[in-house]
Image 1: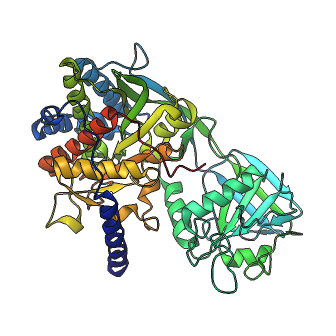
Image 2 (image 1 turned 180 degrees about the vertical axis):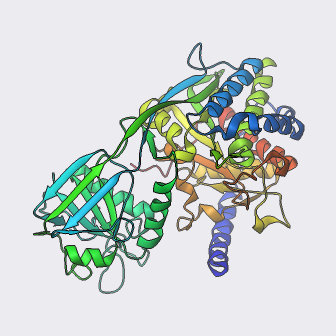
Length: 521
């Protein structure tokens, strides 16, 4: 693990040197007002006072849909009322987020009359509705890829079929990957991203069930889903009507070969005669939760929206212990409140932002980024095409093991993924005002932790909205009842919060909207 981290750090050092060269001649566009006086209203004392309340036992760990979460959203709404920062939705700060909990499915799969053992031979990936599927044959799509340079679906109709695929992607004789034309593998190769992408292609083409063979990841993935299935009072939570209702499973290579003998060596797609039966029984319950939205209207370009976000939820109560979530994400929540207060102070002095700012506290992050998904995919209060960027704050109150001797840092993830300019503004703002060590370790596209996909900014980024994820890294109290407010480094929380504020100030006040030059067309 240390060797892997060292290699990643070396690669990122090279990248950061390259970025520094690009930024040598980058100057921030001057804004009409010096924001320092407003940044200085963000203090460690106020952050501490807020967090000791928000991460107290009174809020019962803020689990989505529970009494504790309801207390949390009421607290946030009251804070904005007291600051005289209105809601963009009129008389309520709450955006209702309709959710459902699907209890763990009881699943049975039979191949050629042989019943498989769940979590030993296969594992359900997610939860679908009760259904019975029976087929005399399946469609084998090999790698399950659909790209400009390669398709596994040529001359194949998979509508209403069970689809079988495997991990990996095809290579040329010289070792280069067909999909990229280089020696570098693409997102199609492995991991959760590849698995979900291939599944989504099959579903788009009409598949009624997807079976994915990945012998390398099977044990780890099956173990994870088995643990999820054994958690009491928990199921799979999703936005109502948004759950993937097509059953999808991961299998090991032994089962893969039972379905199709030549699965390891045959990379051509075809229909295979293999009787297969899938039975699924699922119970579900609807619940309601809330995002909290507050809004400062821009003075000159009110139709252009900058979003600053954090998630309001945490893990709740487990085995009688309260998971207070002081860092995750109490730190981001109180940072957002302080940033809002700083901007409101500027408004009262006639120095409000030119562009509008939406302060977005989202629910259900711990359940799968659900609150931000609902906002971006189903009910954006403001059009996403008018949203210039999302600055997302998720855990900025602690120090990880890597930075014990140099704690003045923050991890930045995603700044350069969609907009070169956003990255440049971020670095230049930090250099001018806060001088924090900006660590890009987890911004690497091959980051094994895949943090870029694991917080709420991603739901904006997937819609081509440039985003930055501010993060202090994991620590020993992550997702434990010991994540308490007494362990927060409040001086660091203050500095990191000010960095977000300064970046937001620049984005909201510079003459031209930032350009998403790397947006996916």
